[in-house]
Length: 298
Image (cartoon, rainbow, N blue to C red):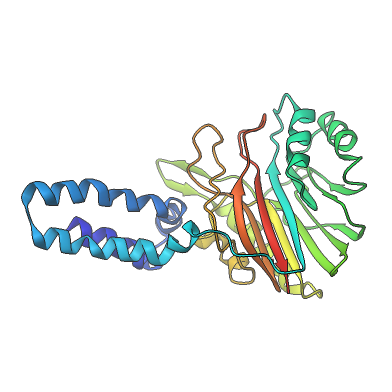
């Protein structure tokens, strides 16, 4: 019975209601980890010598493989027109911004998207990245560094309605790559919390809807979104984005928390482009791991 329930939760997680407590989103945030239940269930089936129990385990195995098996495959070969991008929430408590900046630049990306930029660390990032990334834009606490010229830079209004204090955590810019223009979005959606009442994600969900509308209104075909979205690609709270943009095809790249990564909440998504592979980079002075993605433009 446990194997059947596990398989059903994996296969039909969208059917789990989101009220009360946004249980559906909470399940989807950690959905890949349901696969671990197969291990003790397999041991129990062997102890009981139950062929029926062993057969039932095929249900969660098949469902998990369908959902996540592709992420385990090697990255596909990049097309001739591709970019490497790095996404990182650098943390407003990072005590080594210079070391963090150097580590990100060492990955050799074309674009570097950063969140939680605060003074005086911002000046350190600007100074350290300047040699390799002559073009950059910062709006509020998010920024984009680029090897290619940037135009059309503007802030994005993704602030939840009930936030009254100054709050700017989104920007949009046009990157003039050798392969044509790309609209680059950088965003940091509000944090979520898990408590006795379930998952508190109302602000995150509202901000995701606003960001989704901005992406839908984007006139350029090619779009790359980089950001700390405080949600996994399976979380229905990010549906306004995942319904319009494609997440990574290969790689798990668990990014949070850095000490024991359990979920990838740092995302790279694209339209009229494919995120061929995403991987986590070594830890910096942040509570997030950086992620690097290879994006092929169509």
